[in-house]
Structures are given as C-alpha cells and as structure tokens.
Image 1 (cartoon, helix red, strand yellow):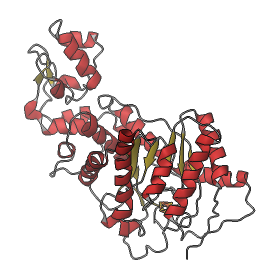
Image 2 (image 1 turned 180 degrees about the vertical axis):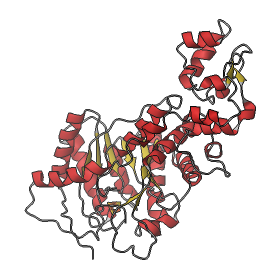
Image 3 (image 1 turned 135 degrees about the horizontal axis):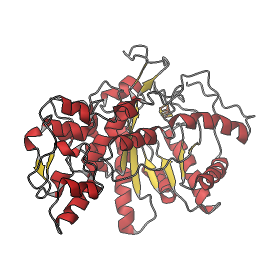
Length: 413
Ligand code: SF4
C-alpha cells in the first residue's frame, strides 16, 4: 500500500504552505517557455500565451507512483495534505479573485480516481453556488474518471483537462506505471463528446479541454511529439496542448529496472515545440513540414519556420507583389499581421523595400527571401551557410533560463 501521510492536526494554513510548495513547480512553466518562444520569433505569433493562473491542489497524496512527480506514493519523506471541498473552494475563490484571471483546481489521486473526481466536482460546485464565483475555472480530470463525475465537474468548470503525459504509449510503463492509454484517452474522448453534446442540448458544460505532453520522457524525437499533438488537436478538438520538459531529478522507487537517467530536457526544446505547434495550428504547416522524416528534431539555433525556409530555398525569393497569403506567412520575418498589411497595401500601390520599411515591416530576416517589384536586396548570402547564422538570432534568449524548476515538479495530473 502506498505510504500516504495525512497528519490530521494540519490547519488549513499549514496545508496551504505545503500546497504552495507543490504549485510553485508547475505554474507558469508552460507559459514561460511559450512566452520565450514568442519573444524569439516575432513572426510566429498571433495568439497570446494564456495568463498564468494559480494552481490549487485538493490533495498531494497520490496512489500512483509516476517517476517524475513529487507527489508519487513512493516518496516517503513528504508530508501530504488533503483539503475538504469546502476548504479548497474557499481558498480557490480567494486566489481567483486576487489573480483576476481565474484558477486551476487539481489534485493528486487521493484514494482512487473517482473519489478524487467527486471531491473536485464538489469543490467547483461550492465555488459557483456558495461563493457565487463567476470567473474562469480550469478543473483537472483524473485518469480513468467516471463519465458522470466528469459531467458533474464540467457543469461548473470552464475548462477541463486530462494529461496525456507521454508521447508514446510505451512511456507509461517507463515513467508512469499506473497510467495507460485507456485511462487517459477515454476521459479525453468523453470530455470532447460532452463539450459537443452540451452545446447541442444547451446544457452547462466546460467549453474547452487541454492536455499536457512531456517532451523527453521516452527519448522520442520532435516528429513523434508533433504528429501526436496534431492528432490530439484533431481527434479531441483540444483548445491547446501544453509542452513541458521531462524532469527526472531523483531516483524513484519502483523504477530501478528502467534505464532512466537523472536528466532534464533542455528548455529551448519547449520553446521550439510551442513555435512548431503554432505553425501547425495557425499557419497551415503540417507535422511533416516542421519535422520531416529526414530531420525529425527541431533545432536549437533556428526556429522551425526559418528551418523550413532553408529546406525550401528553391521557392525563394518570392515576389511580395504577387505572393498569396499562405506563401507570405511562410517567409521568415513575415507573420500573419505583416502578411495582412502587405496584401492590403497591394490594393493601392506597388510594394517596394522602402515602402515595407515605411509600413514598419522588419526586413531583418525577410530581406533574404523576397523580391519587391523585381528587386532583390539580400546580398549574396542566400545560398551560403551564412544565412543560417543570420536567421539564428534569438538563440541566446532561448538559452537564458535553462532550469525552471528547483526540485521535482509535481504534475498533479
Ligand atoms: S503525476 Fe499525477 S498521478 Fe502521477 S504521481 Fe503525480 S499526482 Fe499522482
């Protein structure tokens, strides 16, 4: 039996201190990588990263033993806590009001998945009904949770999520032995169905679902991650896939037979995954475009859009006075906003390099890939290796924060 320690004498305040330690590790990790991705590639942005919201745990006592998680049951040294739904609801509402952007209500698997889900459903019900909280609630769904309990939770939450965690199903045995494809994908499928049916029946239910995918947990390449996340977006109509770096910082009991090395996945990889994700979901790229079979990994030195352009130099330079929207947004340095400006301006005049500058369209990267009214001003590095180093600006920013978590991250499902 797992070693769960729930000292009865802990006050709500003492539990809060323990919970803050847990929540610190994960809140914001995704947004940090995502925001860095945006900073580093101004032409791959048109949807802002979501704001950070506080993460409130119902319980830190888990019956599962995921190797990467500080809540795992084999971690005997930790003190665990479990709130009552009333306690959690009050704390969550207080935090949500302070934060203004909402709250994320989650838990380790306390006793069993359905029991925990029932407590979470009750917590969010109290938030809405007893505290009349109208703001954003993201609630976690436990692996294998009963559809009725998902329905009950979704009635009060705006968003639900169940974490897929690994990019290949063999990864569950490797790092999360009690999880499997069925207990993750079944609730994910159920949430997707309920989102649709609730709209049809005009029933209250969460409007969206997301998931989290850890990169580096199965030594997979980025092509595997991009192919899977794209399939998840399509099949389960996900609002977003969050990418986190697999961290294995302390040897976990029960995993002695696995070849897990004490590692952390490099931070820059997360930023590149977010960029590739956006290219696929917003720019019409395919997983094959960003991670072709021959180059299945994203690069540290250049973003995936620039890498795609370098693989397709036969298409360049393109005449900006003639190129269609889809071609324009594939040019390094030109994103959706610039492409729209160019197309609008073309209705009135001929585009020249000077006009692009007047339109405050940066030529720093795009100049190597464009003709303006037949003129090329990119010099003679177009087919030389120098072009790659010009396009690699931003690399330093990706390396600034290689280590975001101080100890063991708590996935908290
Ligand atoms: S990741 Fe979730 S299920 Fe696994 S040990 Fe942590 S809290 Fe439990």
